[in-house]
Length: 294
Length: 227
Image (spheres, each protein chain N blue to C red):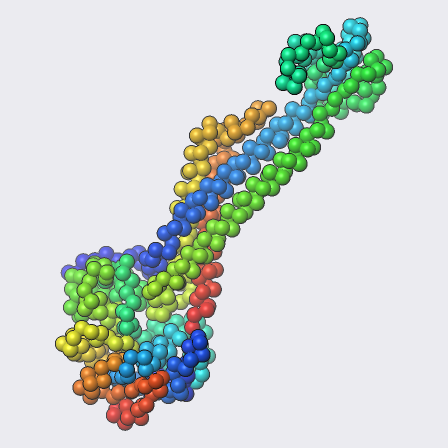
């Protein structure tokens, strides 16, 4: 009896050269970077939404320091009666001083004409008429100023969009590099002296069978590398204490590492994507190379 | 019936240098031929044309009655599967076992695994490698590797067997043994073409010979007459 082990039935031995051994590690690094970029996109999106939510519900009214208490009380009463304003909070001088301290240092409020600040919370769905409110306030305290924070996030929004574009580009580049790596691995396999791919071709294997074998091999290597990269990315996020801790979010919308299904979605979704890209690229590359052979 | 027919075949290298010049040659079914010539005479280049590893620059090549220039890739692959080749450098996959190397042509043809197992076991025993099927070819001796290459070439009972310097430098006894193996295959109906630079060795047999010199076939007629 001759005892020896055979490979899987009808499977061509396309993984016997050294050319593809680096592929999983290259894919792992690229999936790691793409995965973190994807999670970064989630964090940025959430951050922007949180800021916008906070800023769309907040107004600040500045009443000149020289305004009398009676006028101040009139302003407060006017605000409380205005439809859509859900809370009115007059900042105490000490609170105002704390807000100014980062810019001005310890502020002697009694020596400076610092305006009184009134923090307003509004219902963004109530359609508060801010122009009318400004006119009413001006009739009570002519130099009062109502700050609508909804304008200044435009700059922030544009900056976030640019960063999102960069992250999206990073993901695209990582996926393109996976494709290029898989193609280079096929090229390297054919450059090897005594290449199994060439041997199979010479022994009569159909191009489609060789291409399928190479594609399946690249799929396996891509999935392996993708899995390693995704696990590494998840460990990184967990080590940071959850993606939400990367930035201080102003609202209760957070990305919390392993607890956020979107993180799992990105990190598990990118693995088959990497595998499929590696598979398709290897298939295209080997078909092209074989077409160049007699 | 002609298994191989070359008419006015030329082959130029990438640099444009003439490697094969105006070769016309016919190999009849079931015959046994030697192709002799000094190293660099063009023997290997001619074998690479016949085995469809290279295309002729000019001329026609007919294999098993089919004009190879008119065939699509799948049909060419099908022709290759009808040819057994013993490469000069053997071209074994060292990461595979001897058995898996021998099994390659069967797996390429999509043979059922039980047939693969039986045929490979039989062939390994036939070339004297019983019990060595599980060994990596990288661990085998030069003679054993040569026998694995021969077993791979004949495992599918090819209609045409091409062997490029199959005797290597294993000595006369080994060379005689290998020729006897090829003769046994030939008696089963396989056309055999053996290339060797040992002209004196080839002359010891009654088989027709072609001789190549500087890319030209110089006594094809003598070979045909000797049949």
